[in-house]
Length: 264
Image (cartoon, rainbow, N blue to C red):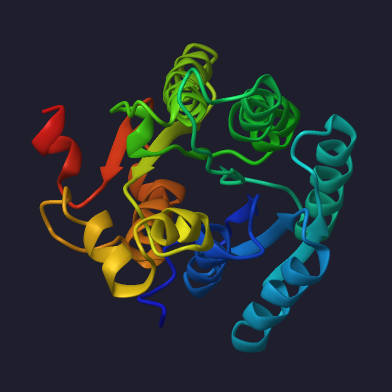
């Protein structure tokens, strides 16, 4: 994943859910483009290892924080620590999330609340807490990771569908607020399809696992392959860069064409 330049030179990014998967990929790609990155995650050892691996290739570009995105006090401590270490925060990537499986009859209240807490409510807590830092480091960007599940429904994903649809509308509302307040802060959502990260492992297993599970999973995707983390990462790099300074309140579908085929 070599750098193609310095598209994010001077940017200071705070990325949640960065111990593995998309978050770790974003952090590495941002560092490769010249950004300083703060990786946060509830998995303390893994997030530190992810930051260490980035620093091995891009020295002094990454720091790590243990961070439960559902806890206001964790946001306060992690944001302050990151801002102190990086000299501010100019990019917020709300990536932390969990997947779930259940219809309205199968899902439990506890399951529903857990998905909402992590996938949606954390964005309200974190964006509200991060805005003062972003305002002090303009131009800034907020990038919220949603899903194609926020645009097209599935009978067996009621909690996830609702949470990820909420992420899209939350992003639009924040974008309009920042524009109205004349902040140079953009806010957009990215909507990946099934991507090769640990979050899809249970879904692959339900389809038989391995190549069999993957073949079943990609049947409805016009491009007939899973997304790779870098596919989503390239969009995140763009939205974090000054190239996207006039792009806000938008939904970016990085989905192999699946929403074009199903929702137009």
